[in-house]
Image 1 (cartoon, helix red, strand yellow):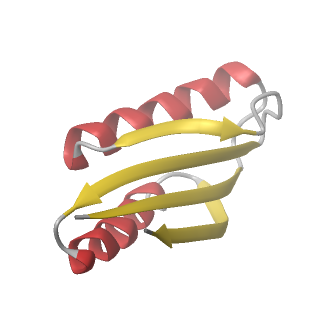
Image 2 (cartoon, one colour; image 1 turned 60 degrees about the vertical axis):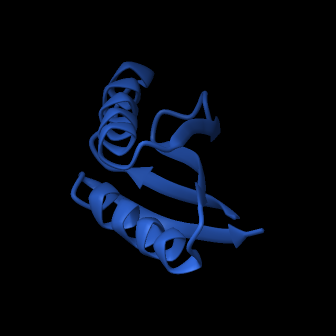
Length: 92
């Protein structure tokens, strides 16, 4: 069994308040949880309205599946009006 942690740091373009950020964050989290059934949460930059730091945890019997999920989530996140400028993939 394999475990992976994904970290995505992004810059939000149309977020002028924490309320705007919350709306974007909630939408991303709901879509990722629904589609991939993995744990995801905001883990940093919580009081910065134009920056978002999300982390995901995933468990699988297959390492290839973990990596595919990482890139699929990245593709899903990039459909929003934001820039993903730092990612990290850690596998255990």
